Amino acid sequence: MLVLSPWLRPPAALLCLLPALAQAQPPDEDMAERLYRSGERAYAAKAYKEALDTWGQLLQTSPRSEFASMVLLRLARHQVEVEHKPDAAMPYLDRLRTDYITSPEAAEGLLLRGVLLKRLVRRPAEMKDAMAEFNRVIDLFPNDPACAEARLHLGQAWRDQGQWSRALQQFIDAFRLHAGSAVAPRAMLEAAETLDFMGDLPGCLRMLQRLRMEFPQVPEAREATWRMAVRVKQRIQKPPLRNEGPWPSGRIKWLKTPTLLSLAPDGDLLIFQKDLDHAFRLHGGELQQQGPPAPGTQVLLADAAGAVWLLSRNGLVREDAATLQPLGTLGAISGGALDRWGDLWVADARTPAITVFTKEGVSRNLASPTINALAPLPTGGVIVAADADRKLLYLDAEGQPLVVVPYGKDLPGPFRKVLALASDGAGQVAALVDGGDFGQGVVIFGPDGAVLRQATFKALGISGNITSLVLDRSGGVILCDRRNDLLLRLN
View 1 (cartoon, helix red, strand yellow):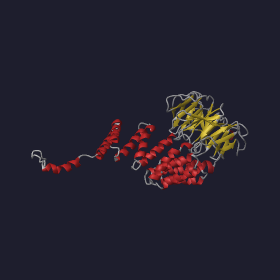
View 2 (spheres, rainbow, N blue to C red; view 1 turned 60 degrees about the vertical axis):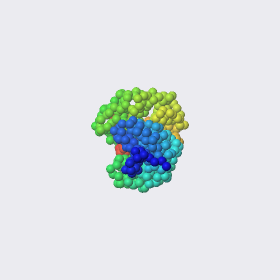
View 3 (cartoon, rainbow, N blue to C red; view 1 turned 90 degrees about the horizontal axis):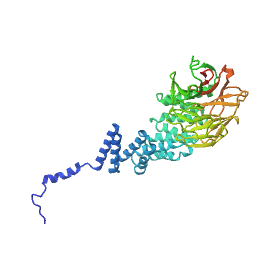
View 4 (cartoon, rainbow, N blue to C red; view 1 turned 135 degrees about the vertical axis):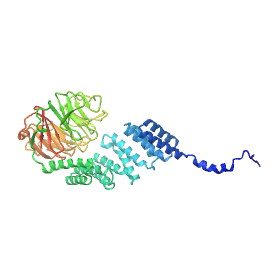
């Protein structure tokens, strides 16, 4: 038997301390938490490289830690919100979905993945993968707060595919099952618009009023106010169009050959002045120059973010882009519109087709007659005027006609051509028409193509060269008078 020398034996007191010393050593989970908190501190100080390196070390050393899933979600959000590189976020979200599906962060990760996939979609038929992620959130995490937004996005996806009933059910579930969520007002607004798509105007108005009553302070309530008022005015009251004269009141000869009008998402009026080769924003009664000069502009648009797009035979000039985007062989631009997806629809007077460009410049052609004016529709498609066929065509997102309106239907006499089209977010369309028995004037159509209001310029006492028009948020029509260098308003 081996007997240790007294000099080699550990003291009894030290033997008693060994278990306590072992417990005092920080296990992997403690180190993982320290790495996570260290990354949080660096991230809050906007030391992003330090934070990302620290979190990357956590994933390498403690992949099974409860903090690993938190890090993956934070890294994905960083790529989306700070770096603006959604593609770089996908590997983190893929790993979160594959390896950490039972973690508390999985629902939010699936939701973000679905949102990013949805942003990549350019056509309704491409929604399948995004919708699968939203359904997973709802099926796997029915009590998670992420379900409210998942239902909202799922409803929007069904709506964009023309599945109104399925869309409506998701919107109703979003505000009924998640009444305290910030998503609820948005879901109610979407539900109201969907009811209008389904032809239920009374239901739409009731939903808008309910939104205003239950959430009076949110931005959606302000949106609901004008959408409700314009529908009541245009579709129920239908007062005769009346010429209010120069607009803004009292401004005479204050523009330099205005030729084009457009309405920004916030309601500001955009004006292109030919003599200055520039677009201007009318904000607070003052003109503000927008974007670079664009000689020969034929189409004036504003995207969802409010940036100005100018379209001419030379190409597309975007306020938020540094270069001119060529448009291939299109050299006789006759109209353009931005749809719900952010795609640009362009008509060319020499081309019997509509060319649709994505933001990346990729194009596809949709068969159509020769088109001379376009305007977007809230359903995701556009309305077009085909003078050669004497028809207005309401097209879906795939370019297929949903409603066909012959020129002159429900009017005292037919007109011969459409000079310009404009639309509002509530589904009304205004046409600037000329020629034939009707003469020159304005016709306002409903979402189903029915004539709501109309008047000739002769009856309104207007004498000028009217080249463009917009529908404002109170149901009025603003006209662009090139000859007299002013704007007119019909109410």
